[in-house]
Image 1 (cartoon, helix red, strand yellow):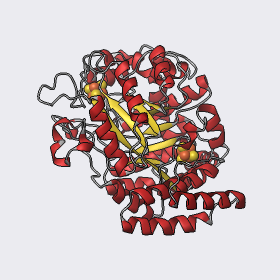
Image 2 (cartoon, protein in one colour):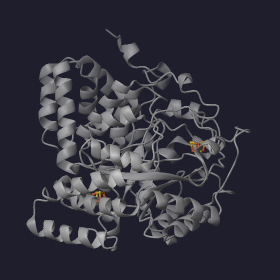
Image 3 (spheres, helix red, strand yellow):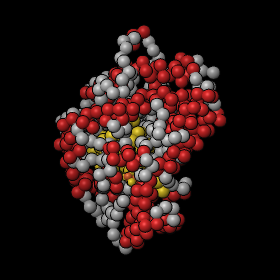
Image 4 (cartoon, helix red, strand yellow):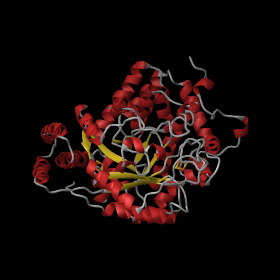
Length: 494
Ligand code: SF4
Ligand code: SF4
């Protein structure tokens, strides 16, 4: 059996020099209070002591089965649970929650890298400023038009914009102009209907500009919640400021952005520490803003130019990764869960079962990668992709597995954001929108972009799923709209 110290891999064991206490307060505006190191360590100790406590784990599972979530401490105990039969119950519950909240739909998106200029020194990312041999590139307006046209030709409707932090090369004006360009591109039947944005932590006023530009979700990964590890992994640049980065979501929401997406980069620090802190961050947003994160992402450190994942001692196995996904699903049932092409087909297949609701497909992680042959994009990649299949292959694979690929972007465009979205989601009503919208957007994809075998499979799936729309008036409405889509109309939504 592992000792407590072995179990707490990473740098976050309580150490004498960390004795300064920050009182845990989820409602505090101070990063060190809502992500309290002491609270995390105490939770880890408590979970470790109780990991075979059948009665306690059973009580938490009973609470979790009400589908209203559990606390970070309770979720950590589920993560640590060593009782095989109860672990199977956790996996079964995660699967049930996914199906009851989101049904069979899996939303698809693609990242779009605008620029890899960056002034930060993040040691796990090849775009760090000290890397002198990576090619630096920034998309011009014409480049963006080419990239987005290529993405539209694949069938994508939802993008996540990525850019390094560089006030000279990538100022907020550049990001705003890029968003405007993307929304303005209409190529054949294609359009990008939702642009999510993943850029560096910024000020309330710049977040308000992003809101006014019509972004969907603002995404920012914490990388690691351990202040000590954070400062070691970010030796230089503005990102080094732990509090500025950790409190970014509060500023984003103060700036009027309703939907925010959080995440950690698993592998940098001990995964139990990150897991507890990630959920504390969600609890903080709920406590202060009345609405938790719209999405949670679970990236793992990947190989890239000059980056060897083996040099990060906290790498996690696929089994631990699957358990993390299941326990997040159980802890925050109403939050979208995203897995990218950093993960292999086999790993994605496993976690799709356990609560993932959104995945990327056909991704290129380089600047300008969609408009050039794959072998030419190596010199600006942020990380190596583990799932290299085309979007069409991913769509077909999802259907083979019994999921419904969805290109839906309806909520944000119908004003269902923030607490309006969460109340629908928490009441279990969102599925009444997700399911029909998935069928209609899949039909668009089949008509415009799918290869013949994908289209054949998709039409069969849509016909059988139509019968699963519970309300007969909605079923009739969707059936009529599917016919209109086959006749050339586009962009219906509920
Ligand atoms: S992780 Fe982001 S901020 Fe850090 S070096 Fe890479 S692009 Fe820059
Ligand atoms: S209806 Fe809303 S929650 Fe459901 S897939 Fe569409 S945008 Fe997402």
